Each structure stands twice: as C-alpha cells, then as structure tokens.
Amino acid sequence: MPREESRLLPSAHGRDARGLSLLVSRHIPAAAMAAAAFLCARAAAPALLPPSRGLPRRLLLASRATAAALSSSSGEGGGGVEFQGKVGFLGLGIMGAPMASNLIKAGCDVTVWNRTKSKCDPLLSLGAKYEPSPAEVASSCDVTFAMLADPESAAEVACGANGAAEGLAPGKGYVDVSTVDGATSKLIGERITSTGASFLEAPVSGSKKPAEDGLLIFLTAGNESLYKRVAPLLDVMGKSRFYLGDVGNGAAMKLVVNMVMGSMMVSFSEGLLLSEKVGLDPNTLVEVISQGAISAPMFSLKGPSMVKAAYPTAFPLKHQQKDLRLALALAESVSQSIPTVAAANELYKAAKSLGLADHDFSAVIEALKAKAQSSQQ
Image (cartoon, rainbow, N blue to C red; front, side, top):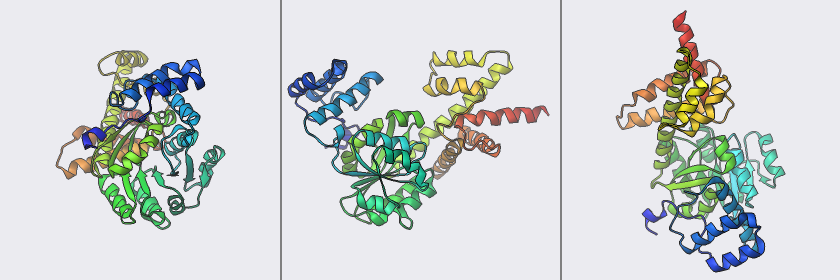
C-alpha cells in the first residue's frame, strides 16, 4: 500500500454491505441502526472517510458498539477488535490506566505491569492478567504498549534490567505511546529492533478525559507493518491516527503540539487575570472566547475551574513543563527561535516551585498571580 494511502487507515475493513445489513437487522437493537447504516456505507466504500472523522460522538460510540456486536455474532474473536493476539500494557498512570481499560472492555487479552503494583488492581478486576516485570509482559504478549511519564522512565522500562527488550523476539512488537524526545525514542527503537522485534513510537495528543473516552490522537512513526497490525487497537483507544514516517517524527509532532498547548494556556491565564483586574467577569470572557474564532475545547473546559482556583489534574503541570523543556531543546537543535515558549516555560517552572507540579497544567495561572503580588510588594 502506498504510504500516502496508509496515513489514515480505516478501522473497519472489507465487510460485505448486504450481509452486514442483514446481520444488523437480526441481532442489533433499533437504537444502533443509524450507526450500522454508517458502517454498511463505509464497508461499501471504505476509502471515503478516515477512522472516526466527521462522525458525531454519539454515532461514533454506537458504531463501535455495533461493530463489536457484529463481530461477536459472526463468530470472530477479540470482542469486535480486528487484532489476534495478546496485548501487553506497561505504565498505568493517568493516561495508561484508561487506555488499557478500553482495550480490556473491547475484548482484548491484556497483560499489565506497573511499578506500583496496586495500580494494576482495577484492571485485574476487569479481567487483565499481571506479570511482575516489563520483560515478562513482553515475553508473554504479541504486542506491548508502554505509557511512561518521562524519557528516563520510558528508556528504563524498555531497555533497563528486566526491561521489555529482554522479553522481545522476532515477530513481536513494541509500541511506545509515552511523550519523549526524538533521541530517546530512537534509542529505545534501536534496542527493541536489536531483538528482532518491531518498534513503533505513538505518542498521543489528549489528556485524561479523551483517554477515558477513547478519543486520543495517535502520532505514530516507525515500522509501518506494525502500525497496520496495531491499527485496530489504536482505534479502540483513539479517534484518529497519523503515520508520520521515520522514528523521531512522532515524538517531534507531539512536542510541537504540546508546545502550542502550553503557550496557549499561559495566554489564556493572562486574559482571565486581566479581565478580572479591569472589572470584567472572567466567566463571561470564557463564554465570549468559546463563541469566537479562537474557540478551543481547552478554554471552555478549563476556564470555569480556573476562575474558582481549582485545578483537577487531567494533565500534570510537571509533564507540561517537561514537554516545553524538550520542545526548547528540539528548537535549539535546528536553530529555531521560540521566545514565546521560552517565556511560558519559565512560568511553568515558577508554578512547580510553588508546589503545583502534580496539579493540572492550568494551575500555571497561580504563577502569574504570585508574580503580580510580588511586583505590588
């Protein structure tokens, strides 16, 4: 398949539309018929739409449930997921736990590991298996995913003592969905491929809620055959996926995305504080922004709680600052000036010094408040 055609591969393939319609009428409740009709049309012309794009959330959920029921009715394994084999998942934090949970709920045979074993318990109650080391997970599974907090952890879990590489072999795959720099991703990829296994980097755009809802965006690069092989699993956990070529490109894309997000949050914070300072209602500012050209889900979601000085953690501030630091290093490597990001990074560092590292990254507004108080004194 040409690379251009594989950048966004359909998540449902090659079903006979007429047979699908008949099967739906016999086995699927009327409430799912609209989603089934979408699947039938897609089966007849699979290249019309990339996975999940242009599909309302309610219909998307119904179509996934319908696809799962159809696979079950037609005797296919995997709970509606077109993947045959065992899946490993390493790292069960804010992002990893819901991602692994979605795989289990979709019918996948999942084996998990986490440095703190108690975090595995909710997934074990859903039917997951447990292995005491990354190496043993990788050894027992056909494909292993890893979602770690930072480059150091990602490298250790993949390449360290009892790391995943020790359990890999030809025919197996390793998919790192952590956010790391390109150099770390290449280092991990080289160690993984030295075992004969295949490697794919696949950092995600999205935070806790998208992870829970299966609406992440995967930015993949590396082994294209492995990408195609795990595409059904990515479609369970996400709403879209991009194949970007060589290892390092996925990491770079994720850093650019998070660089923009972190800078936007700082600007939004400044706007909230300025509106309040001049006597405007910051809640009204959130509403005005949500209806204009600069509308973004992040502003509508975070704004109301920021006005109340509440920062429930969806994406930890310490991780946002880490990504800005990595983005600055990436820019330095190609002599690109990013002064806005450099200034934003200093504010996130100040917020960390205030003890806000584990709060949501929207807590960066507190650094601006502290700076204003300091200047008044």
